[in-house]
Each structure stands twice: as structure tokens, then as C-alpha cells.
Length: 421
Image (tube, rainbow, N blue to C red; front, side, top):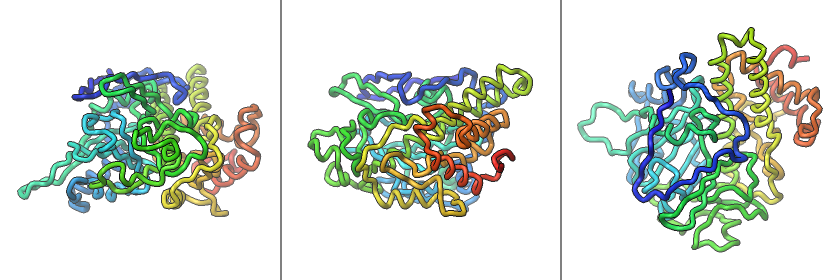
């Protein structure tokens, strides 16, 4: 049985949650997160936060508390999350909403397997880790300076209260990440929140977010602050002067980082739903053709998103931070020609080779055969050209398909034999 907890925050504007948006068009998981095949709240965790907790307990890693930022920098270092990923938002869509505003925006940081949220002077640091089998697991770390007599190191604690907002149709019915574009007409008024991902047109993105860099000539919804005129809203070099910087790690909320995170949030949710459906159906998956057909349909949704088939086009002139681009592109394996699925394009689309880098994640590697087999079959059909649908020809050139095939053959060791032909 799912347990939903109501989030009440003093001063929080009433929230209108616009479900069924363009951000998530597929089906949703309708089973129980406590199904014996899942046991979301009871099964042991296998993710970067669980690993860090073990190292904190044995003393091999220590967290350092530093002024108004608290454990922030220490936690980022321990989780190997780059400061360059920082995103800033002032919409009140968090557990600590009462502390968030334009003068005290929330900061988000992320790497391929984990995202971290920090609010200056907040009670906790919030962390979401993509678990090898559980999906997205939520944690909090108390922001309290250590007492001189403390004998126990700080620990990240599972935070099931987060499920009150993080299990919805926009997360595909599984615990997942959300990226909202919000608008609010004034204090105490209704705030409309629309989920967004890589398919959302840029003109509808980033309400309630700060956006540094340039999205070209697109009039997006970000930077909607009275202190910024129309020109600076579209081309904001940094956030200097917009709020007092004490505790923050960077002066950017980079457009390239925003684009990457939009893809990553949606891809994580799809992988979780795919895995959960397969695990729940496992007893009959080898015999029931209806289950086989269902898994093939979900795999097709996953592959379409993985290959950016319906990605919203990027206008000419997107300008991201060079440091973010370099840091992100340095991740991941490279093939014999030096190509990587982490290579960014940002001229007309997000990735130079449009296939999700999360194909290397532990969550993908540990997909049950009933999920991984149809995903690899569908990937092969699209990349080999056996799938001749117009939308695939339009989204992926022959050169794109060939490059992705070659990269995966060089960097994925678990490909089926038919991929080697």
C-alpha cells in the first residue's frame, strides 16, 4: 500500500498540479511499491548515498560543517557531485518551501546517479539517489553543527515524507524526480506547476528558475524577477547582485545544466517504471503473451526517450557555461574513436550522439531480463534501420544511428550477440 503524507508549510501558496502534461506521456505503474518483488521501504538500498553512509560509519569519510552552507560542500565532495551542475530556483515547490524566495533561492546539484537540494539556513540537505533496484531513494541530512561531545558521525536518513510529492502520474507512478515550471500571480495566490522534460518546448520551460547563459532567441519562462528586464531575462551571464551570495557554491544556474537535468529526471523515472513492471510480472513473464506485449510497449517508450526521438528542438545560439560542458563531457566511457554519449551538442539538440548516457547506470545494468531484452531489441531495430517509421528517420540520421551503434559496441559489454552482426 502506498502511504502519502501531506506537506504543510506556513506561507506556501496553494499549488495547482498540472498532471498529464507533455512531460510524461506514457503509462504509469499501478502496482504497489511494497509488492514482494519491490519492497521499496524495506529492501536494502544499493546507491551512492548508502555507500557513503557506510564510509561515514567506519570513519573513512568525514563531513565538515562550514558556516551558512553547513555540510553542503562536504556532501558534494563525498558524493562526487560537481559544483558546475548548480541550478537555482525560487519557486516554493520543496519540503523547505517557507525558506525559499528570490532572495534565498534553492540550489540543486546533480551527477549521473544522484541529485542534492540545499536551502540556505534550512533544516536539512535533501538527496535523491538512483538506486540499482529500488528506483529513486530519498534521503535527508540534518543541517546542525556537530556538538563537541558527539560520538556518532552524521548520517543520511531515508525520507519517506518525500513520497507525498514524488509519487505521481508525472513520475510514472513510481518514486521519481520532478522538474516543474511554475507561475504565480502574487503572494497567497494559486501557483500552477507544470512538469517538464526534454520534450517540453523551451518557451514553456523554467518558470520559477534562474537561467544563466543564453537559450538563443527563445523567450523562456525563467528569470521572471522584477529586477530583470526582458533582455537580461533571456541572456543572464550570472546571478551576481540578485541575492546575497553567502553559502552558495557558484554564481550560475546554467542553461546547459538545466537541459541535461531535464533529460536525466525523465530517464530515471522511465527506467524505474520499466524495472518495477518487469519484477512484478516476473512469475508469468515467460509464459503470458500479454505480459510480453506489455513489456515490449513499455520498452518502446523507454527507447524513444533514450534516443531523444521527440526532443524539443534547440534554437541556434544556445550558450552554456564552458566549465559545465567540459566537466559533463569528461564523464563516461569513450569508444575507439574517442566518442562518448556524454558529448554535448547544444546547437540543435542536447547530445552530439543522441542516446542516453544512463544506459551505463547500475539501474540499467540490473534491469531484469524481461525488461532489458525488449529494450535492447527495440534499440537494435531503431539503430539498425529495421524500424522505418518516419518519426525515427526524422529524429535520427543514418550517421547518428551508425555512430551510436559503434559507441555502444565499444563500451557496453552486455549487448546481445545479434548486435555484433
